[in-house]
Length: 193
Image (cartoon, rainbow, N blue to C red):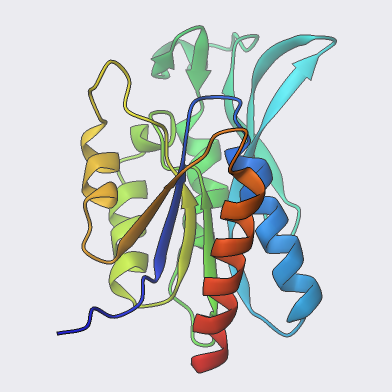
């Protein structure tokens, strides 16, 4: 029995290897070659003050942005926020931007989810929304962290082990080849539906 082609492309690798960059490069290539595609989702990027990383923001594909995590925030409310290392995670801000982007809408061709990681998973609504997208049969391009000390985050492990998922582990030598591979597979998938 032939297995159906993957519809869930997961990019993983160590921090700083270029997961978000790869996801964004595939997205830009798709927008150039197929400008009519209806793509929803978000990506995360570092917030820097000078050379120091002070947090992360979540950015929707149409350019709206909000705080995901910060090491400099100190409001009365932020004392209750979960922490990852030195960062306080603003779950409400993240949810207000990311969750609407993960709603299944008629005519959606592709979801971009960068990333499904520890900070994002503090949202109790996030992973169920990701699973709904996975079950919708709409193609997904997502990034996930590499297991730390051999331990995977439970939600990430469920994605990684999903029967429909293809996992690409990035390193400096294979980034361009993986970008081309994912792009070509997505073009093939999107041309067929």
